[in-house]
Image 1 (cartoon, rainbow, N blue to C red):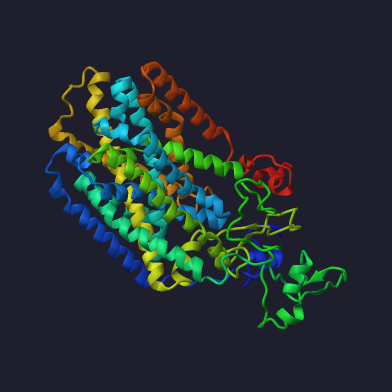
Image 2 (image 1 turned 90 degrees about the horizontal axis):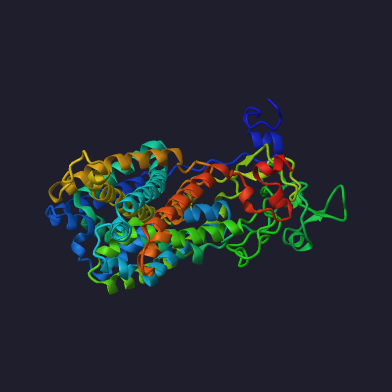
Length: 580
């Protein structure tokens, strides 16, 4: 094989050692069985509570879909925050901050929290006073049946991606803890959440959300603040290097008692006599952080070069905040809880408080990315590198690209923190994911049965107008939830955590980018125009959908979207490196 091939290695060695001279990554021990048992027990408990609520709905569609419009403030806060703080916002947040940096992950809870606050300011009270059963009903009153059907299709498509992202998160946890395939874990998650959601409707969703919020928020917050306070090293320090490694400045040289380099006595190099006197007593790393890392860079969201020598996707991060902040205004689950509130005031206050809770719980989680990099990052003993990669800025002809461990954070929870806290946080991640999965399943089944099938006779005269009635609406909603759950599980298996796009975070952005492009503008038109125009709404949705679809399949996802700033970190990234 060619020396740069990832298949080239010597027996007992590995590619990065043979080609680049870097030590083979150390194996991490598998998680203890008690982690998996605890998570499974918590899932079964939530499922039991969800099934119990079937006795509350009493066959009434208003009870099933909007919980009888009876939910008090504390339940509204818990359910709204639970929908916001899911595995996309938690596991996706820490995964992105681990792979890239703090703000790359923090933008997820920031965007979601901003959305709830914007909803409190502009939309929530109007939604509650409208007395609608679903969000597309709001459009139907102003724009007619055609726009109602279009909005229904757009929001269902959005929630297929949202549900898939959360199934990826739950599946990643179960696959790692139970040592089963990611695909099997995703389907297991889908079946369990589907079962109790279709049983009790929004009552089961609401009251399991309260339990999941209590467990999830506390567990995740406790772990985050414990790690931030107690970890002695919260970000990788300047690299100590390896034999012949050259230090970038005098400060780092003095830190590690460097010595003059053999080939250049004016430069300072790794002290082999002190740090590596023998093969059995050798302390070194991969030289990945010449100047060290930080838990966060205060100027990452304003300075494109704050992460040099690595690229900083500053424009993309601001775009993510915008997409989540405004796209979530058309989220079926958010607005369903506003409809289920006792009063418009409760809906408004609930959104505002839930948005603040999203900040409080989600943002500290992004700090765990840098802590995870200490144990499983590019300068750790477990680091893996792509041999066929280079970096001009770092002067590396091979093994320049670090390959993040897709289970890095899960390994941190099961190996580096107290077992109780690790277990609690794992249960919290699964609980937060389930709380959004159930809401997404319910929302899709509700909208399709109520807003599409119930109106089928309007578009197809040969279908009876009473095809769907009050008596069979709940049954139809339950049945139709099956194919939607299956479709989301299929998407999740295609974009699972090992996918190059990042799965949870990627699917979350796509979900609300869809409705931002199509539904959000007509939604504001419902309440902030004197005469809502059906034609204007139709044109807005069609042009938004066309633009979104064209850009999805024409823009390459290979690094070009980092924007063409000057500097090697931007010019030599992804596919652009081969054409520069």
